[in-house]
Image (tube, rainbow, N blue to C red; front, side, top):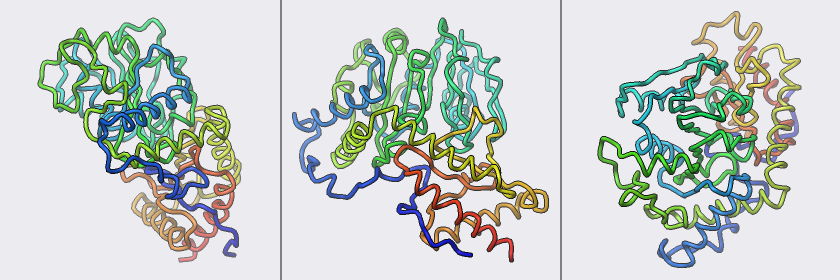
Length: 382
């Protein structure tokens, strides 16, 4: 039978992600629209986003943080183009975004000493094969595969290369081992449900040292330039952005940070996300037609929770049929106003992807699960 209770908030997209509970457009009423982003008030607002982000995440005091253009992609591209070259590079690719960074290293930057460590969707590469005398590129959480690194213990503390981490679907929902990371990037539209278009770039002292000692062999676009006369350009790390940000987006980012502080800070944000994973785990244990794409429980994402088909749904259907089944489920749930945008990523195996980050209430996850059963039963009748 069709369930009666629906999630109060059916937004389970993996990006842009659902706003914080209780959000309304009135939350942006104080935004400094129509003002120069270089005015004192605007710079102070941007600087507040930087400082509150640092505090909330427990970032080391000697790390630098800036708001940069073009979301997480822009932040990570800025790091790749500015920092790579002096050493060989290892790239970890177990889903589409890691594979994208490998394309940059191989085809765009064309670095001569490069190596990719691959794994199929649902698994991690052998982390023991990473060489930390080289620069190492990896996502903390595979947004399109639902596979995360279990911790930072595999990263050498005495490394001589830099570690560059795309953490956009991990920050504010997972423990990030800051001393093991030299570059960390994320975007506002992921874990705290902010508006899109802006990225955050965190640099360790070792990354700053590399910036000031290494000159890329190619010209850098203006929006990638982090140094001036061989020294770190201090402006972006004080709120003086490289290009013009949306002050509406700045206000929204600030709103999300204030909410996070009000509910208990980083510990509670992580706990909220883990409770969402636990709710789906309890359901998956007894579900005959769905399984986690990530087979290893220690590597299962609590944010981008990816499900593949199991049982008859897998053994009696080829991949094309499974993709058709996934589309039926996604469309049915969308029409009912139960869940929006929960299809698997286009390059991933067929299935579902449910965002379980910190802004998602576990009650909504629990209300969604019977609807998954209903949608599958309806599709199975046909």
